Every structure is written in C-alpha cells, then in structure tokens.
Length: 409
Image (tube, rainbow, N blue to C red; front, side, top):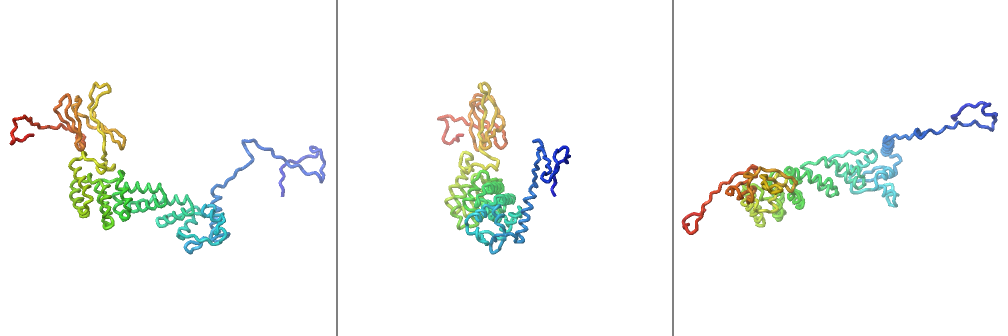
C-alpha cells in the first residue's frame, strides 16, 4: 500500500480530464525553516553497543559464528577474530597481517594462565572484569601482553588500593618490573611513611642491598627515632649473616649513629657482637662518640636529622637595627632552609646592646660583650626557647705574684 500525501483536485481546478496516461500529482512538502529541521538524529546510546556485545558473548558461549580457537595451557577458547581485533591491537596485528595465525583455526598462546585468559575474554565481550588479590598479577600481565590499557590501569589502581605494610615492598618490585612509575612511586612513599611497620614483615628481609640503602639513606624516612633504622639494618644482616656481614659497614654509613641516644649507643650498638668483630666499622663508632661529646661542633652527613623527627638545621639571626641604624632591635628569628619559613624566637634581653659577640654551643647560643652591660653573658636555650643569664666566676691573674702551688682559674 502506498500512502500519497496530497489534496483532492477538482476537475475545474485542474483543467485536465482524467485519462489513463495522466497520474495524480503528489503533494510536495515544503522544507521547514532552519530552526526546525525535518531530520531526527536518533541515538540509542550505549545500550546499542552493549546489546551487540551481549549477543556476541552469547554467540561465543554457543560457539556460533566463531572463527578462531585460542589455546592456553591446553584449554581452548572459541572466539571471533573481529571482536578480538576490535579490542586488542595485539590480535589485530596477528589476524590482519600475513601471519601464520591469520590463516589457522587454532592459535596457541604461551606465557599466560588459562584463568587469566578466561577473565580477559570476559572483559573483551562484556566490558567487565572481576579483579581479586589472587588474579590481579596474572590479569595485569595478560592485559599488558594483549595491550588492553584500560584493564591494565584498573589492575594497577587495584594494587595501589591494596597497599599494606606486609605487601608494599613486593608491589613496588612488581611495579618496577613493569615500568609502572606512578605505582612504584606510591609504594615507595607508603614504605617511607610506614617504615617502622614495614620492617617487621618478611618482605623486608628479602630486599636487595641497593633497595635497602635507598630507604635508610632517605631524609623522608618517617621514624620516631633513629634506633628504628639501626635495628632494621641489623635484623636484615642477621637474616643471612654469612652473606651480608661484608656489607655491614656500607649499610651503617647510612644509619645516623650520632643521633642515637648515648645510652642506647653504648649498650646496644657497641655491645653488638657482630659490630665488635668488624674493625671497618670502628671509624663510624668513633664519629658517633665525638658527636656525643662535641655536639654540633662535629658535622657529617650522619648528624643531619631526618625530617620526620621534627628537627632541622636552621639559620638564627640575633638582634639587628633599623634600616637607618638608629635603633637596636631585640628580635631573634630563625630560618629553615628546608621549609623556607621564618620563625620568631624569644626576644633578646638587654636589647640596647650593640656590637656584641655571638657563638653557638651545641644547640644553644651565647651572647656576650657589647657597649652596654658588657659584663653580662646570655645563653639562649633552644629546648625552652628562653634566654638565661650566665653567671661567670673569674679570677684575676696577677703576673709574677702567683706561686707554683696556687691554682689559677
């Protein structure tokens, strides 16, 4: 049946008699204005492609229209070349070029697990994959082999969400092996932030020497005290003492022995039997002893506090004057080069002083001399953030009148 759009014409209007040779004129539909077009741009959305994929998956289950069989570990998977090629550039290169696999019905793939291949094909035909702690590694390797970036990234994100002190080192090694820089960096940051818990697990004992050195040498290592680092190193060495004894000195060079508590250093470090029988470590022990006696006057890379301890080397500015030089200022401020921040300290007493001498003694500051009250000596206590007047007992020494038996102050 043909529907003709038009209007009935009278004979008078047409002026033409009906005849077999004359056809009725079809009504012409005028085009609408540009604001309202006569075209309907219909789109069913993602449901159309999802529906087609669902049908193809049903075809795969029924082995309908399948034209290739993928064999993995002796298990056969019936698939469609077109679907595999549309999803994976690996299969596109295999089937579209003049390879042997493009002509054969059975294609064998080695180096992957059949369970991983099953999960991979489920993702190809449905867009969904079930990622678990048991299959994430093999599914990642399979998706990497077949160049499915979305599934590969999903596996990497899943590993990142599973980070724990017991597995972060293993995941980092896996990330390094597959050039996952973002995941490897996330693992390293997690290990540095949770080092005290990480060293308690078996993965820590399996670290290579270079990997361990990278951690214990970092200023970003988050620890409450340096004793944690020393105990971690000794635990790692004693785990395979015969093989790791020769590298004990190389590891202790990264441990900040001068920052250990003096009692712990004497009782635990110097009392360790392995260290006592390692003469090459004596120089490091001597450095720590000197620091315990001299304080900040003895500097080395091992005397620099880690950032997590809350201690850092700062630059202290004592006193000063106005730009015109007419008024002395009592302010004491410090600058932290690490954070780039200025911090105000306790104001200097006797602020009318000028031209005085300033020196550092361990973590304290001494101010003496000056034009006014030159006999006073003030000490800044960094722990109390307080200036304390120092009382000095001086003995006058008269030449030619002091006998040999007298004590001279």
